[in-house]
Amino acid sequence: MLESLAGLLVQQPGRLLAVALVLLAAWRSLRRPNPLWIPGLLWLAYAGWEWLVVTRTPEANIRVDLMLIWPVVGLATLWAVVSIAWRRWRGGKGRTPAE
Image 1 (cartoon, rainbow, N blue to C red):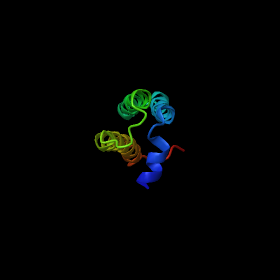
Image 2: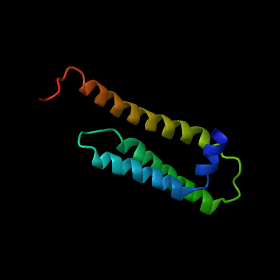
Image 3: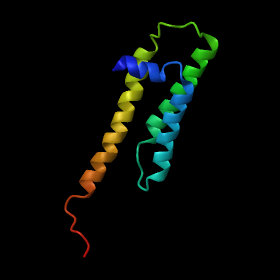
């Protein structure tokens, strides 16, 4: 699974930028304050870093930096999505349908 994920994201700054833009667009479109801006900015920074790696050192095939970047970006994204889902789930408790 990680190998297929790596194939999609490593040395693909455009795809990383797309993920960042989707998260930032979702942050802007949701009415309530939400934490999606945090992983959006992290993905944006990761896209910038990946662009630098691709343009400066295209021969880099052992990427130790990803051992730090992927857990941070992944956990931040998971936290934001779970946080929003939790708020929505908790927000619906105790309400009666409007008639």
